[in-house]
Length: 164
Image 1 (cartoon, rainbow, N blue to C red):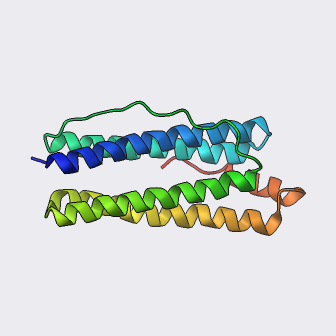
Image 2 (image 1 turned 45 degrees about the vertical axis):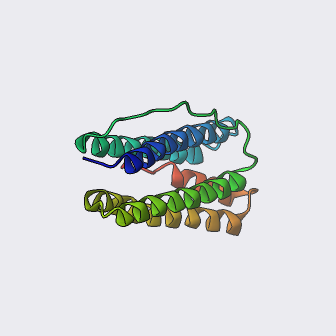
């Protein structure tokens, strides 16, 4: 069995992962509307990945005989500025997710909930990858700016992202 405190924290994270999926889908549509189809594709794949993260937590919660408690998700914004701003906001969002995962991990450790700690280790590692990957995109965008051929080259590169 899982503690009520951990169950509530996991449910909050599940809802946050779903909100992240919605955010990235909105960002994808924003990029698509500006003809940046590669950036849009990358963000759409990211939205799917966030949904997969939520489902992985759902499976874990249910395996521990916890109760799933889905809550309404606020609509994401519709405007995000230029592509550089989109990915800067993505990086900041991922840093916030990292802080939440770290707090969950700390809670599992304080409760001596070893099963949750082990499950959350995957998310800790995943967040290192997420921040690194988005940080690299931000660095590349800052290097090339948002005008000229180089941004379109980056757009074409990000269009090649496969699903994970």
